[in-house]
Image (cartoon, rainbow, N blue to C red; front, side, top):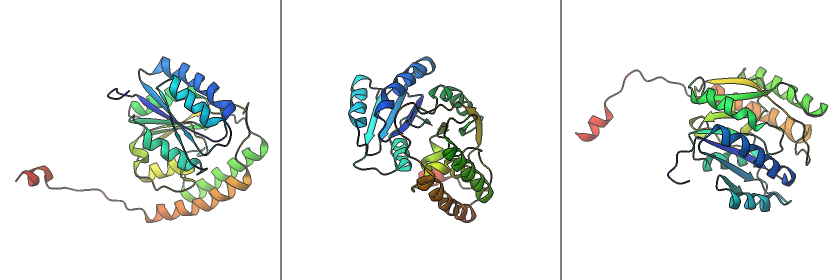
Length: 250
């Protein structure tokens, strides 16, 4: 694919999702082939202990549009997303989770919103969540507190279905939990956000890695860090400047 213009890079983090990788890859291929001339999918194996890495190797060998990065050990979803962003070659990047609950069919519409210039980041929100009560409560509490403390950006910051220009994530601070605050971090840099309802599906294979214990309380603490960043962020507009090109030539 070297030298070819890639329309979109899809980044998918996976941890112990051996049952979901190939079905999701097949579904993704069917949708992307209809919508894009050139695309790539970057899978990031976050230290899986099942057969996920072997499947990703088979997938990459069979289809050059699939690439993967594998961590030595579990580093977390934020690290996985960041590694995928670093590998992405397209100007526009999409993200979904690797558990099959996000619908790849939502990506093209979000892509068109970003490509048209209507927004720099298009975020999905799960209109009808297919999760158990514990995860729904965790999400409601997290989104509500996030909005109260850091201001409203999007209604469902926990939804991984989003499409954005590469510039939106190039300068964001790297920290565990970063992926939950991408809309807020993009808005802090002046990027334009929008959101749209997306499909959310029940998990059919594998087990969820998240719970109130390992997700809600950590994200609540992270929000105070984001609040501090917002208050201490540097904002300025340039009134005028010299012609730097002329200065260098003379």
